[in-house]
Image (cartoon, rainbow, N blue to C red; front, side, top):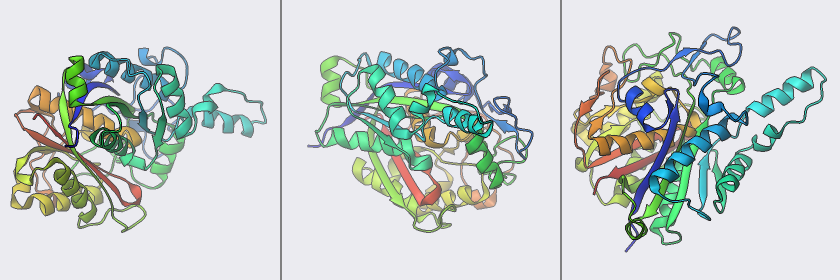
Length: 390
């Protein structure tokens, strides 16, 4: 029989701070973390807001590349929670690499100044994953860079390694720090909200906002967790990946690709749509994504889609790009363990084209047995993770 996959450790950092308790206070409390950007001069841009950690936050104490600092904090929390050092374990990371060194390099080039900074050594996805893995004594390091499904894919790949019996334990995660180059591209594309707030699934939604984020999860076979006496926080029961092949940026309006990913996750888990008690939606707050995602949910759940609790936590954290899937996986695990569904922060008037139970603004006590976490990306990539308590 294929091995069951347990989540035995989680570590997370968002604009609310480092650690799961910060997520509980901020995300589950329905607070939005958006504020004016001070990390760089945002005056040239139409949008000037993001959900970012303060520049003087303790997580930046080392002065090394920002994403590496985030990964250190999250990995330490996850390993401590799992009560393992995971020596030699595969490390799977969703990331675009750390951008700070690249930006400073090009600024130096522009000024015809010399530049030699170790931060360039973690500027690529593979290099950042390799450096982080080496620091913690992990084994092989693999980077995933398929945009906003990157860390979701890392988790799916890690779970498959365990399910197939190849390994007993893997460390998976994702990281993203708001940087001017990526910020400028989204601003130029008109993807950002014009009001400094994200309103997923609302009539008033007009775009996304970025956010700092990282998360690391320790995945382990259930027999291995039992042998070690490790606590199982949740089971990663299913996972599914798909591609729309519809448009370079826009999702398929009918949501067929997202529906395929959800059905694949349920097939791996051996459960049906009727078993799902909560969906952590991708919910970017953009007009096209939220409508397409709603169509996908109705495709999968039928009439029940209007009554299943579906929240987007990006209304609190912002969109953390490659890190989004890992952070939202942690939030979904917390929802199952705490028996509390996080709200969609910033929710105003419902959109009739998004007729969902969006858990507006306030969290809700609930005890779902199974929960889905859904992500989508530019290029038509889709990914779904299905977590359970049994």
